[in-house]
Picture 1 (spheres, rainbow, N blue to C red):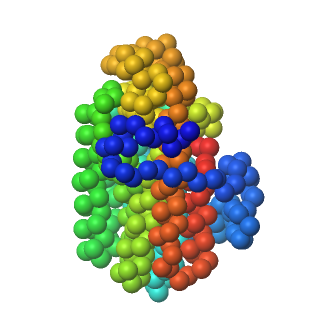
Picture 2 (cartoon, rainbow, N blue to C red):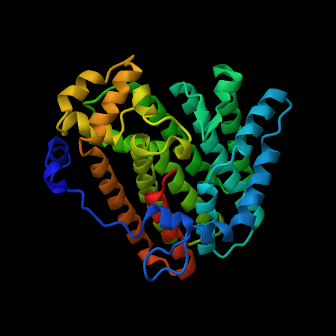
Length: 364
């Protein structure tokens, strides 16, 4: 049924390329609670996370020191963001990838991990202003507590502080890579605003937005972790490709959770992207290829009511777009795993594989 559904206009846009369907390698709950990934794996996500927990604690300490400011409100709002927690995935990717290089200079890696997380936090603060979001990870957002202008300045402060931290690493390749990435990320935010409620946008526009919103920062987290540790160029490039494909899968699953996630687990209202006009893959598929395409095209519009949003969510769930998005995420996951083939360090490679599978099967 899936392969018949994908024979729609989006398939013709991208030529003969088809999204293959792969079986999941274990249940989401089993993965998170500690079951192993497949018969050959000797570790799970909890094992990987606990192994790097002392290093991640050091990254958090670096973060807390780095957000201190002479302005009390900036310090308060920035500290709140750090203490709100999060999975710290970008520092974790950087730490794992650093094992592929000979250097064991931990302070440089903690600085890199903290700067990467700071860039991520800055984008979240700006996102919350753009989306008028009051809650994130089950807590009030900076804009909800301090207002839109203080939130925007907090995001700007975090970006500026992150740049200062990247400079302290001392390798101009780090600065060049992050400068290019941050420019592209900002372009992605502008394009997302431009495309609000645009149900007829091409698939390539959505995928480019996913790249700029999420995959790019995960990609540079992997490549820079290896670079700072002195890894060979071909290894740095392979890890950058891995991070890109894993990041694409991660964001597509995030978009799926906006329609099927548990609000108490995800930490935000189900359907919030749709309500704000940010049309992700399940909605775009439903408005173009699903059985309720015409109804959705009429429902999805600026200033749509909460009732219309709820009705649209129900129709999107019935459209086949959820399955289509999950299958596309699996395809990116499999590409990420294949990117690891050239790497020689077995344990670190398995850690990256476990982490990529977790991102693809998560509930939050």
